[in-house]
Image 1 (cartoon, rainbow, N blue to C red):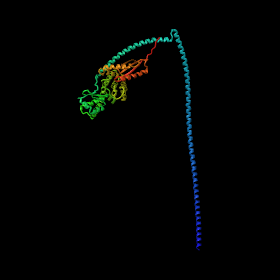
Image 2: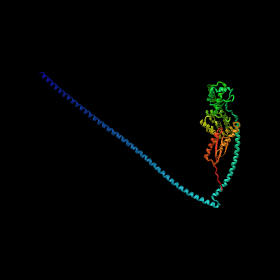
Image 3: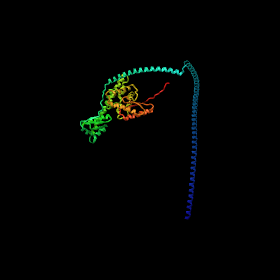
Image 4: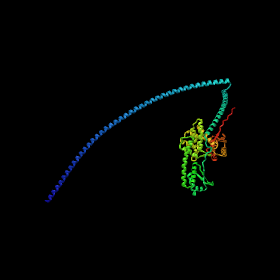
Length: 512
C-alpha cells in the first residue's frame, strides 16, 4: 500500500516537472520572438532614418557643389576679363613702342644724312683752305709754319717786354704800399696795447725759515715728504741749498699746489700726513677757483665772450704755463689785442681775430696730459666745444703748418710772431739760439742728396733743396721723415719744427 502511494507520488512529481519545463520553454520562446520582432522594428526604423539622412546629405552636397561651381565660374570669368584688359594694355604699349622705334629710326636716318652733309661740307672747306694756303705760300715765298713762327716770335717778344715792365712797376708799387701799411698797422697795434714786457714765471723754490725745517718736512722715516709727493705728484728736492726746497714737476698746476701747500705747512708748523692731506685738498680747491677766475679775467680783458666753461677753465690753467719765460696766458691776451686792433683797422672781423688770438695756444694747457703738438690738440679742443670754423682756421695756421684760409687767420699768425719776437718777451740766450739753427742745418746737410739747407722762421722751419738727379719724389718724402726723426732725437726746441724738402724739376731745350 505504502509502495503504491510512493510510486504515485513519484509519478506525480515527474509529470509536474515535465509540465513546468514545457511551460518555461514556451514562455522563453515567446519572449525571444517578441525580442526579435522589437529588434527587427528598431533595425527597420534605423534603416529608414539612415536613408532620410543620406538623402538630406546628398541634397546638401549637391547644393554646396553647385555653389562652389558657381563661385569658381565667376572667378574664372573675372580672371579672363582681367587677362583681357592686361593684354589690351600690353598691345597698346607695344604699339606705342613700335611708333617710338619708328620715330627714332627716322631721326637716326636724318642725323646720318646730316652727318654726311657736314662731312661733305668739311671736305670742301678743307680743300678751299688748302688752296688758299698754297696761294699765300706761292705769293709770300714762305711756308705756313715759317709764317706762323715769324708772327708768333714778334708777338711774344713784344708781349714779354711789355709784361715784364708792367710787372716790375706793379711789384714796386705794391711792395712800397704794403710795407708802408704793414709798418703803420703793426706800430698802431703795438702802441694801442701796452702789455708787460716780462711776465712772472712759475715759482719752483720754497724759502724756509731755517734748515731745521727740512727735517720736519722729511718726517719720521720720510713719511711726510712721501705723503706730499704722492698727493701733489711733484718731486721735492731737499739738498744742500740753505733754507730752501726745490719743487720739480712737469705740470705747473701741480707744482703751484705743492708750493702753496708747503708754504702753508711751514707757516703753520704742524707737519704730519693728515695735516698734509687737508692742506693739499684746500689748496687744490683754491687753485680750481683761481683757474676759473683767471680764465674769466682773461676773457674780459681780451673782449671775448660766450666761451664754453671748459675753454675758460683751460685758459685759466695757462696762467701757470710759461714758454721761454713768457707767460702763455699773458701772451694769448696780447695776441688777441694785437690781432683785434689790426683786424679793426683793416675792416675785418675783429671779434673773430680776438677770439682766435686768445685761443691760439689753448692746446698748451693740456700738453702735460695729452700727447701731440699743441696745435693739433688745440684744434681738437675747439672742434669739441663747437667754436666757429673761422676761429679753428686761425688757430691751426698760426705756426705756418697749414695755409691760412681767412685774413683773420693771417692776422693771428702775425700777432703771435709780434708778441713772441718783441724785445723782452722771451728769454733765450743768443748763443743757444744760433747754436740750434746751426744744428738744424748741420743735420739736414748730413744726408746724402742734400744740396743746401736753410733754417728759417726763427728755427721753426727747415727748408732743404735736394739734387733732382740723386733724390726722386718718393725719396724726398723719405728724406723729410728721416730728418724729422734726427731732429727729434738730437735737438731740444720749443713747439714744433716744420721740415720742407724741395725737389726742383728742370726742363732744358735748345733753339737751333
